[in-house]
Image 1 (cartoon, one colour):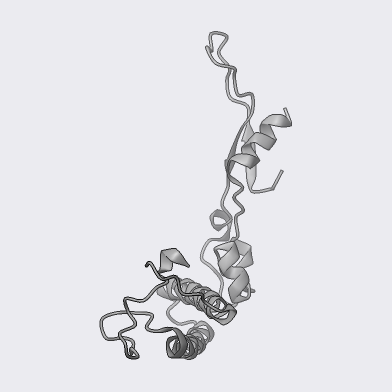
Image 2: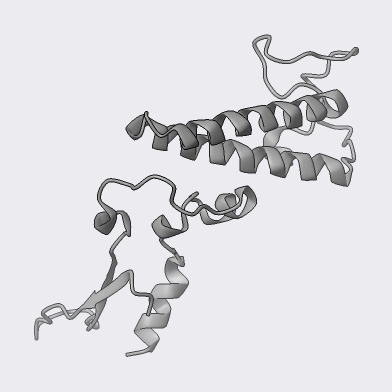
Length: 89
Length: 76
């Protein structure tokens, strides 16, 4: 990545929120594996899925696709190969 | 010392070629005493959960790395 794009504060804010919500989802996922009948945890999980989806939408609108394999849209020109990569953030 | 960190005094051989470690510590993780996790436990908010590495405060086990060990050695 020779041309370094400067990312604004919102980029880091959204990315951190995504990271946090993904972590909560993983924790709830593991918890629900052993507590499949905990309706309240399932409700919380589904709420967080929705919230994550909204965050991801906003992020991808402004900063390009988060995931590959047809799970995200791209603007033109092709945004997947644009930095910063996760290890450059 | 944190209640999750316990210490013991190992046997010190009189022929120990190295300076002996009089006290050794080990960590007792909180999940050992919880059993089957009860539902509806209080949770960290998402950002704090990320910082702590766990969603439920009751399961949080601190880790301070080498600095922590040096501290216990200095306390001797």
